[in-house]
Structures are given as structure tokens and as C-alpha cells.
Length: 316
Ligand code: SF4
Image 1: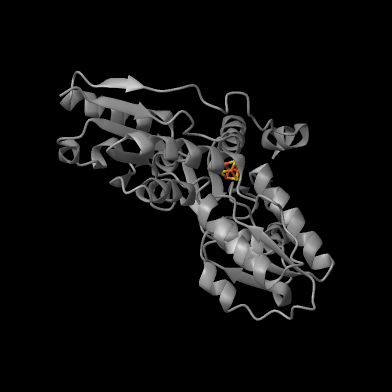
Image 2: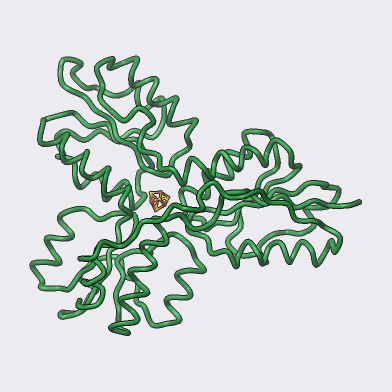
């Protein structure tokens, strides 16, 4: 039986991930190691292993960073008190927060300055949500993860209310949560399409296209990667067996038995070599398998490093 491998037209590194990795690469090139990064710069095991092999040290908290060292803050965003702590200690720090996450931080800050009760939609414990929460005044903060959390919200409907979202959520589930919020608080403020970023939306749309034509979908992505997990769930909603794998060898190739069309995609922090490795692995077992992929819808999107940040990476 001839097998077809359908690769999502839009997958792999988004502009925000490329931006953050560019910061690490420039700083490494200029200053070498030791270089500290607070939290995984992006949630991908292969990327982290590559940097570790170059001597980059990943830490959870600033007290692990020796005095006079340089530390980079991850793409997911960092709460203001951490910047304050770094300043107090006189550490040299560089902020690699994705500009789209920074935009959400600004909205959070503005809401708090205006005393707006802020409903933050996202996954508790995820670094992005923790970072964004830091920009919301704690007496105004309400975190919701699902529709039933909205039912349990106890905000005075006379008060101004706004919502913000994590950038890497499921478009569909977030839409349901926002509809519920608008029902409960008709005057609620928030972006019409939530704060889910273009990269998350494009990758979920591309996976929906795969799920409609494939008998199995494999997502390359690490367990901690929110956007990768949402891709697997998006495919699974179409009743297609869907799997997430960190490395090509993690995939149980026997699952392809009897399958004609295999869908392959990857999260926004996954290097192309992982997807290529998976395709090679499938072709090794099924040498006649053909690869099909349409053009990406993101060819021209890039977040250039601001001049000041570029200089910082070279003078940290
Ligand atoms: S997934 Fe979106 S928000 Fe996250 S780094 Fe990429 S572009 Fe930025």
C-alpha cells in the first residue's frame, strides 16, 4: 500500500521563538559561557539539550545566578518583581520575551492602572501565565482555565471587567470561555480574537486541514510545550488518533500499520531537524512513502531584534 506523508504547511519555529533564540545565540557568541537562562528559553528538549551542550546553564530562580553574571529571561515572559530582583543584585540581564507576550503584559498593566478586574485565561503553572499574572494587581486577578471556572467567578458585575489570554491556547476552547464570560459580564473588555497569537492560530488551522484527510496525526513537540499539546488535542477532536513526540525515535512506528495518510506537524519551538528525522524514520520503514506539503502562510513573518536589544546582547 502506498503511504502518503502530509506535512502541515505551517509548523515549526514561530517568529517569537526565532527572536528568543537569536538573543541567546548573539549573547553566547559575544560573551561565551557561563551564560545563565532563567527557565527553558523555549519549551523544547532538543533546543535545551543543544544549548546545554554549549555550556548554557538553565536555572529556575535568580538566587542560582552568581553575582556579576549575565542572565537571559525566557520567551514566555517574566514578572516585574524578577526584573527588580535582578536590578537589585546588579545582574546583567537580557529580556527575550516574545514581543506578542509583551503586548499582553502592557494590556495587563493598563487594566490594573484603571482598576479593571482582570480575568486571565490560561493554564495555571505555565510560565507565560505566571509571568503575565505578575503584571496584574493581585487584588484584581482572576485566573480561569475552563468554562466551569467562569461559572465560579465571583466578580461584582458593577465593576469594570476585562479579560486577557495566554497566547498558546486552543482557539476553539478559548472561544467558548470568552463567550461564557461575555454572557456573564456583557460589558467585559478584551481583544475580539483573544490574545492567542498568529503562530498558534496558523498551526492549529494547518492541523485541522491534516486531521480532515489523514488517518493518524503525529505532532513533534515537548511535553511542556503548551502550543504543541494544543495541536495534538486539535487533531484528536476530529477523532483521528493523535500523538505527540519529543524525538523521532519516540514514535512507535507500528502505529502506522494499515494507515494510508500520515499527518505530521510540530509546535512553534520545534527545530526542523526533528520533523525531518521523523519523516526519514517513516520512509525508512515505508520506502515508497511520498511527502506532500503546501507553502507556509508565514513565510515573511519575522520579529527583528530592536537595535537597543541587539546592542545589549553585545555589551551585556
Ligand atoms: S507561539 Fe506566539 S506568543 Fe509564543 S513565542 Fe511564538 S509568536 Fe510568540
